[in-house]
Length: 258
Length: 269
Ligand SMILES: Nc1ncnc2c1ncn2[C@@H]1O[C@H](COP(=O)(O)OP(=O)(O)OP(=O)(O)O)[C@@H](O)[C@H]1O
Ligand SMILES: [Mg+2]
Image 1 (tube, protein in one colour):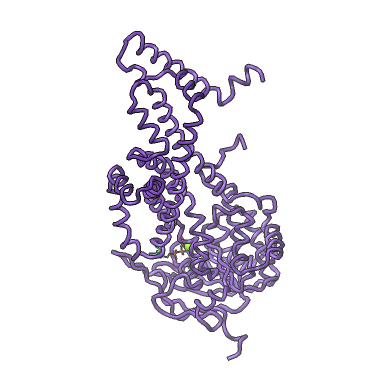
Image 2 (cartoon, rainbow over the protein chains, first blue to last red):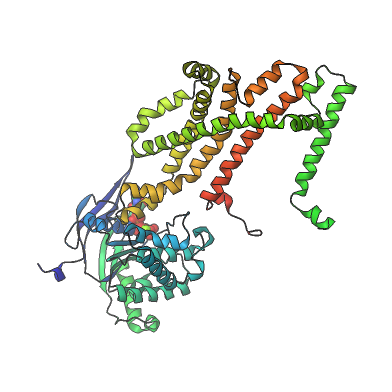
């Protein structure tokens, strides 16, 4: 088996059953999917369909109750211990006692990067997310959208092989969101990470992805996979193209079919 | 500085209050002594100006004895805080240790200090050690309890972030749990600091040679003629408690300035 053909992330009939004292919730059922190295995919679906659960399984933060997950041919745990992941959680999860620049610096401290190198990297990241003027501020001094941008910069800091993003832009206004969509694609084209992007916005998933995994709720199942054939680099004008509208219609249909 | 400035200063109300209180106190003192002619009137509400005079006369003695008390209380406090913090860490690491030690920690708090102090004193026969031990003993529990709560208060997702970096357990403590526990630690320290001073004074009442408590007891014993000195020792005792509290608060502001309590709501700063 050659390395190129090994999928970066491979789920095989993965199910997740949450058990609390009195109830059981089947959050994810029998999800099988492959994500190629360097691919940009979205997990799309309504609230409660198990997107976050799937992402957490991929990140080795929880273990599926059934099925198997492989990351680059090995266990997800091995990938996590090899520091392959950058994660943007649904909430920013910034550390209150760290200023903006120190929050972005955190993963670099964890991989033991030299101080001078870290400073350059942090400054570049601050510029990337447009927060140069706020680097000395504490998280509580920032708006929700700005906090989320800090979280994105932090996830990108160690140039992770796999970037897992859980609705990173859902708290942002439309303008900032579209701008950051474009920025994210340009970062991705440079870094070459494999990106798994969770969203409930159909147009966002189309604009960003190579493929969209459409999930249906109760229990969370993979209902269809839509190839996004739009050429790259993607531009804002594409949002108004007939192909784009056709894709929106296709994905809507796959929801109807549920 | 013009009159307008003085009146609108935020210290102005405080000054007015303090001044008003002094006037009322002096008047009550005079009233009790000369109008009501109560017995031992000056032990109840002493003249402020007499107390001030006592301070100018015996300031040095009060300072020396106060220092003896305070320095022992401080050592005991540091000792108790260190042990309390350590136990909190151990308990946060292992449920087993928590279940093993927590009942004893609580039980230890049931022993009245008033009973414990003479025992400790009898065992060590050294007032310094007794003061230190009792101050440490009092400090230990509130620090352990509040620190443990702080260590546990961490947002689970913040821990998951650490997992995603493949952080070692000690790294999670160093970069996440300790900083997150600082507010808890400091609320424990702020509760404990004045108590440690009180504890040290209590030990002195059991028959020490030095300390503000000794001075307090003697002057109480000598009766009305030493009334002003007795009151001065009480004031010094209270002052030591307040100082210990303010000192911890100051350190907290320096060490953990990011807390919600310290956030300015705009305006000044
Ligand atoms: N820790 C948990 N314990 C029990 N049930 C859970 C837990 N986490 C999630 N669930 C349940 O699993 C289902 C899927 O949750 P999940 O968070 O994965 O959804 P989601 O697609 O990310 O939703 P959203 O778009 O609202 O974030 C939900 O019904 C939820 O109630
Ligand atoms: Mg979610």
